[in-house]
Image 1 (tube, rainbow, N blue to C red):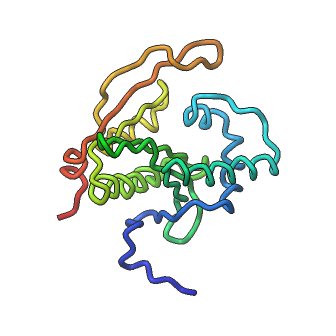
Image 2: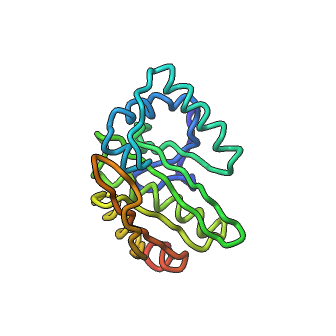
Image 3: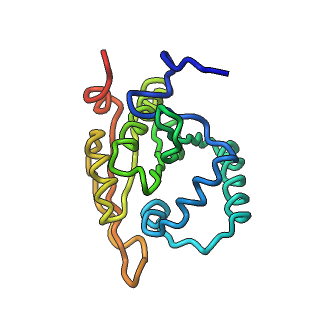
Length: 190
């Protein structure tokens, strides 16, 4: 079947988002071996996994996500190449807040895929779900993620000192926020 994506909401000039499936476990497994990036994503060093173990962990993650209200996506180029994943989570409908977790695969970083994918998901959260504020934090030293957050218009809101232990020392969390009106002023097309 050939799909015409000309008017598809979940894409822009660089990437397309599709629902993450249990079959995407291979991308999770390959990213698993990038320990520095995994630490910056989950604030921990994971124990080794076999392929079978990775498949089980990913399957459980996808199944639990649905139960917990998370929406997970695979990020693809417009040619269908998998370049990463992201998901919207911690949705607080009452207060209108949410978070997004993302990982771009090692060979595809620095090409704008993460920023492009975030714009799609932020537009959805703000302009379809009527959520009010995106909240995020990065571990100190995560320059790439901080740069992306600033490009999106996020404002540094504070530092929580010494929250994560790694490699013999405590690392700070740097917190960012972005309101719907800030995002729309910078990125919403008329």
